Each structure stands twice: as structure tokens, then as C-alpha cells.
Image 1 (cartoon, rainbow, N blue to C red):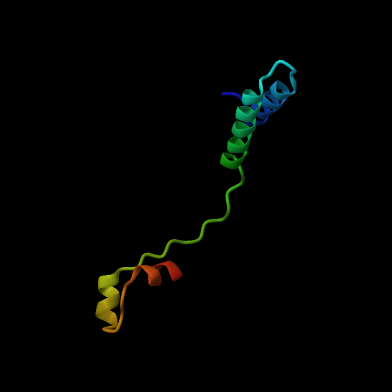
Image 2: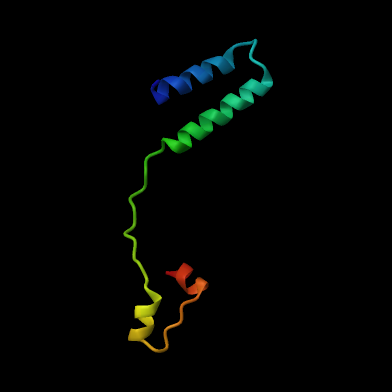
Length: 73
């Protein structure tokens, strides 16, 4: 498979050619944008904390589990 950098350079070179249509230039620009987004460095992941509403409710009788409370965590 072709290296990502080489592929982007090939698309940019194709955009500079005078016989490339405007639609193809837009498609190439979109492909370059997507490739850069897919291959960007990943952010460090936050540890996943699983919330078990049943056990939390058994621990604390006043515990309520709502969608908004889950999103705030």
C-alpha cells in the first residue's frame, strides 16, 4: 500500500495540473482532508469507568440514574 505522505503529495501534484477539472480538485482536497483526519496522532485515552446503576442503587437508596447525570460524569 502506498505511503500516506506520498499519496497526499500525488493528489496535490494532480491539483496543480492545468487539465484537472474543478470538480476533481475539490474531490482531491476532500480526500486530503479526510486522510489527514484519519491519520492524525491519537490523543491519550481516558480510562473507562463503568457505572452499574443497580449496585449503586443498592449502596445508596437516594441514587438516581438519568441520562443527564451520566453525561456530566
